[in-house]
Image (cartoon, rainbow, N blue to C red; front, top):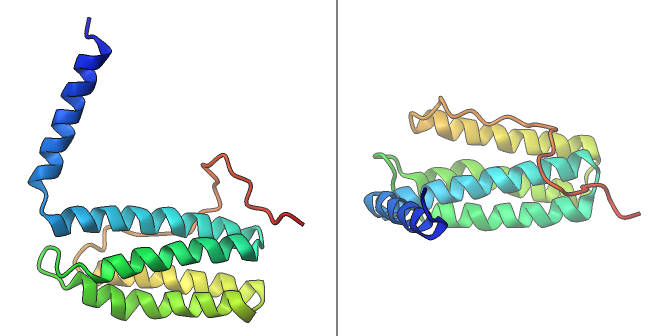
Length: 148
């Protein structure tokens, strides 16, 4: 029977080995895509709940992740930074503007358009098999409804 400390040490060593084998841009892109998906889902649930304050919070977090993605020079021969800046950033800015002064249906449409830009970028980088879609499932122990 394995002792927990031996198992943990072995698991950490394997994880470090896998991470060390990935290039910095590869690792950074994967981490940023994870953040984009995480904050997008939470923003979507906030929009569905019509919680403008919470949606604004998550869209701000998305903006930071997009900025980080914009600094990645390339991945698999594609200019990820340039593509994300050209394709995703304008859609995110439209979503931010909609959150400032639009009706919920327009905000929801702006969010869907942003998600479409993610899928368009995946197509442009020969990763079209990665398809992002909006989901109303809430996997978190969080209430997305407004306080009032």
